[in-house]
Image (cartoon, rainbow, N blue to C red; front, top):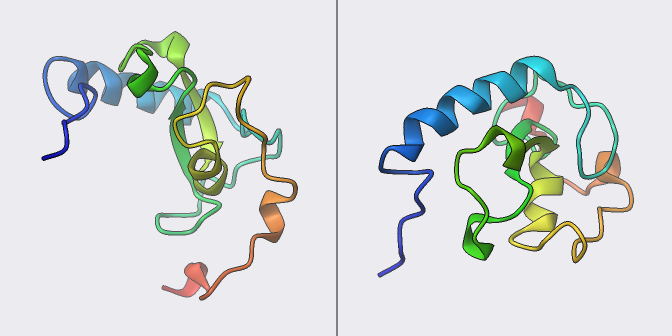
Length: 106
């Protein structure tokens, strides 16, 4: 059975949600690729906004500290995965990701 991350449960959950709202309200550029994030896009659109852990929780990054959170496109965050910033190569053209369906009409 997979271990549940501390930002998904425990006392960190409330602080993560509060800091997530701050990130979504104050940042507008993907910290991974450097391109603007369209806040009107919703999940499951690959270019929708999400909050990334700079140092992944799996690599002992703090699960809810504001200093460890940044805005990212969902696709960029997925490409970064659980790598440290020094290990992750940003997607070359995140706006040109091949889609199997049009997420904006779903």
